[in-house]
Amino acid sequence: MRDETAAAAPSRIQTGAVPLQTQAPVPGRERRRAAYAALDLGTNNCRLLVAEPTFSGFRVIDAFSRIVRLGEGLGTSDRLSEAAIERTVEALRICRAKMQARGVQRAKIIATEACRLAVNGAAFVEHVRRGVGLDLEIVDRQTEAYLAVTGCAALADPLAESVIIFDIGGGSTEIAWLDGAAANPSTDPTLRIRAWDSLPVGVVTLAERHGGAEVTRRMFEGMVEEVAEKLSAFALRAAPAATAPHFHLLGTSGTVTTIAAMHLRLARYERRRVDGLWMSDDAVSTAIDDLLDTRLEQRADNPCIGRDRADLVLAGCAILEAIRRAFPSERLRIADRGLREGLLMNMMREDGVWNRKAVR
Image (tube, rainbow, N blue to C red; front, side, top):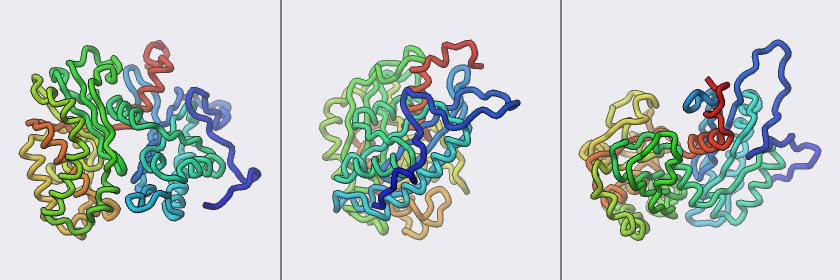
C-alpha cells in the first residue's frame, strides 16, 4: 500500500452530521436544494448515489457503480490485496469527484464485510482518508442489515403481515424478518424488525470456496447446503413469518436483479422494469435452472450479467435458493435498491427535510 504524504493528500470530504463544504457558490447561479451522497463500499462493488430531497422522498441526480472486488482472496487469506486496493481507490476517487461536482452538503460513506474481516481493513480506511480525502466508516453487521431494510422496505406488500427481506452481498448476506403490516409509509421500517442475522457468506466468498466458473448441479447443491447451515438459526427464529397472511420474500442484490432480467428476457438491463417486479416461485426456479444450464462464456456474454459477474452469479443463486427453501413463498419481490437508499433516507429523516415547507 503506497504511503501518501501530508502535503500531497487532498482536502477531506467530511461526512456524517457535518455539512460538506465542497465548492463555493457561483455568483448568479440558481441555488440548488441540498445534495446528499451515500457511498456503499462492499466486498464486490463500489456504489454511489447523489440525491436531492423531494416532497416525500428523493430524486437521484448522479450515480456511480463499479465492480472492484475489494474482498478478492479473502476466502483464503485475511488481507486486502494490493491489486484490490488499487482498483478500489481508483473508484473512490471518481466518487469523490462526483460529490464535489454536485456540491454535496452531507454524505455517509460506509464499508462492509471485506473491511470488517481483513486484518488490514483499518489501515485501508486510513489510506483512503489520507490519499482520497474520504472518511470510510466500517459498519457492523446489524447496521448493514437495518440499512438494507430501510432502503427497500417501501416495496413490501402493505397487506403482508410478515416479510423476509434479504440482501445478498459479496462477503455477507443480511436477512431480516419484518413482523406486522406497515402502518404508515413514512414510519421507520426498522421498528418492525422481529429478528435479523448477517450470514458470513456472500457471492465472492462462496464462489471462491466452491468454484464459480463451471458449476455443476452437484456443486450448486453443495453451496446451497453450506448456506442453509449458516441460515438455520435465523430460520428457526423466524419460522412463523412464512405462515402469516400475504407473506412474501423481498430481495435486493445483483443476484435477484439478474434473475429478474433473465425472467424478462431483457436485451440489456433496465432498472425501471426490474425494481419492484413481482416474480412467482415457479418463475424464480425457472430462471435459476436456466442459469445452471449456461457455461461461463455464455454468462459473460449476457449484457445483464457481464464478464465481471459471470463467475459469481450462480453462487448468489445458491444463497437465494437456501433462503427460498427455508421460507417457502409464492411471491418474491425484486428490489434494485438497498444500502445507499437506506443511508439517504436516514440522513434526510434525521435532518427533517420532509417536515420543511421549502422542500417541493
